[in-house]
Image 1 (cartoon, rainbow, N blue to C red):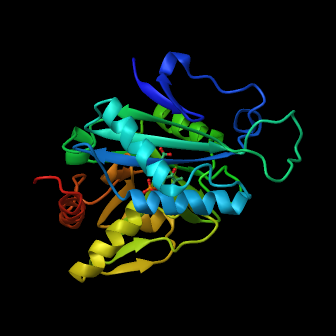
Image 2: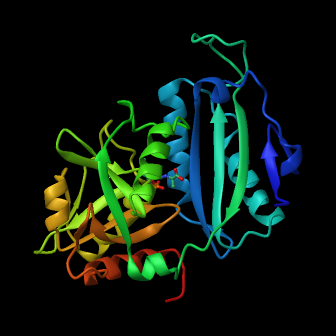
Length: 283
Ligand code: PDD
């Protein structure tokens, strides 16, 4: 694939990048990550992603591996060196390396790696026509507000949904939708209210959602922060999910039930445009 990646202070060809056998991210999933969208060579909502990276690290007692401006500079350098126009830039911080032991000592040297991925984020068939999502029990731990690299629950849920013929999956716990396996879930009621679950330990606070919420406030669009049931989602007028890798993505089918007429609705279209306009993407 020929990318240049960042690993522990160096920019190297991806074939040469190696992490240590005793890296706690590898052995315990003791690591956090961030994914920032890149459109036309520009990072989108990166301040929010770096805020969340700092928060995730803080919750786990892992030090910030580099000052924040240096992290931003290395993200920019990855984009430049790989001539990335559209895609994502990925950052991953593990607690560091030590002989295998559940307990860790304080003050370990965290390890930072980063790489880019090319991906068309705008104007795709999925963006135009929407995606289908399955519904599944949320299999994850109870600190989903931390963006940990411990992702097997999401991997299994997405793989099962795909095998069942869906594009993605929304997770359900105690009769309420928590979030998408790698996105924030939203529905729009018949009277135009956008329902989004309030921030808590049950879900990851989405950066795309936060940015969109600011845009909605400026437009006088109402977001009601509350959890909704799978049935409310299936009965909704419109549905969509947000993430750095899918931006504002229309959802046209939930667990076998078509949403509206099975096409992205007008509010979702408006939110897509608002978000892309703010990201500087020409209509
Ligand atoms: N995932 N919820 C979960 C569980 C996620 O994994 C993500 C993003 C989101 C949306 O967050 P944001 O809008 O900040 O991207 C919500 C990324 C894209 C990933 O794991 O690849």
